[in-house]
Length: 415
Image (cartoon, rainbow, N blue to C red; front, top):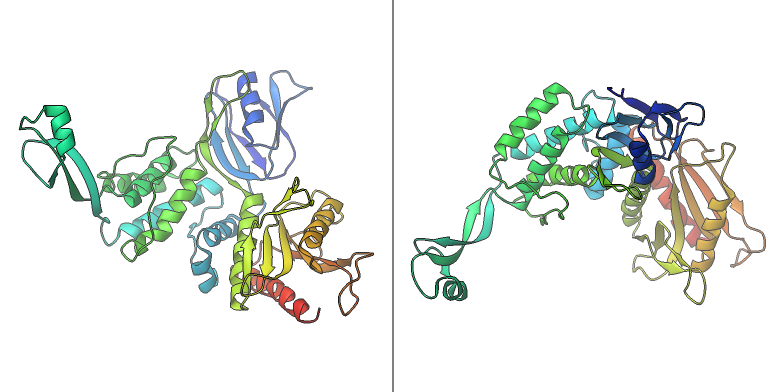
């Protein structure tokens, strides 16, 4: 029996879907969804509820699960493009980061964006480079591998064991681009015109060896020679890291799931911290991301603020920032967020902490904490709340973050 596709919405209501127990348990253990539980009202059905992950996955023998983001897809890919290359995106005010065409679903937009980036990278020809090759040959080329010659052939010639540098298209950069094109061709929902263009690109990259599934991606170093490849490489790596996870439910065989998923919680955090770091740099300040500290003197409880604002020399902390994409409580901030922000400020000896939320809260407010009055002005610790409306244009988002970045500077000068 053919199982129809399942459409869910990010943090939306649960949907009852006919599923086998094996696939239902696999989805429950995978982390793809917020929850996957048997439907108590319908035998053979499971209640699927999406969380922060958006995109599409295909389960063997089960449905294609598509999760629609609340954020417009074009804005979602702006966040992704900015996080992949913040310096360039900040310099260009976010313009031209990722081209998603006219597609309003995650996977078609992703496939279009990657195809356009790879096509642009290859427009001036396939990048080639030198790679060390070791082989047995009938003639000497390059250098003789003396130890291997003796071990394998006891001094007889030919063949000879040689090593040489080959000028080839089989480079780390081309392997990554080929692997991304091949991975996209396996995803559900790739439009036919985009699929045909991806197939053509895969043929052009045929001299690059395919990657072995499960192995680490080959390393490449940014350089003048591969500068035209770099936007495509960053997006291709995002594809390869966000697709085809393998999930193993307890007591079951591995269940391979093909798809592409973006974690909106992580994407929002990466965007906010990357953009704030660039804005702070303009003001002569530095920022440390995921700065590790301990809550207690014994060093048993670790904390990792998303971003700590410091002076230009990096020595003195000025403020702490935490990004929060999802707020569970409909009528305001979660108390836990405030407690967390206060803990960060206390450990770092700061007079302020900032919480940056996605749209849905008041534009800005602050809470002055009782019993924390300190400094020459006698002011207590302040916990600021900021809100970013992700439906706004990129330049407006970056302007809002510039304003947030200015607060630690102004407040530090008056403390």
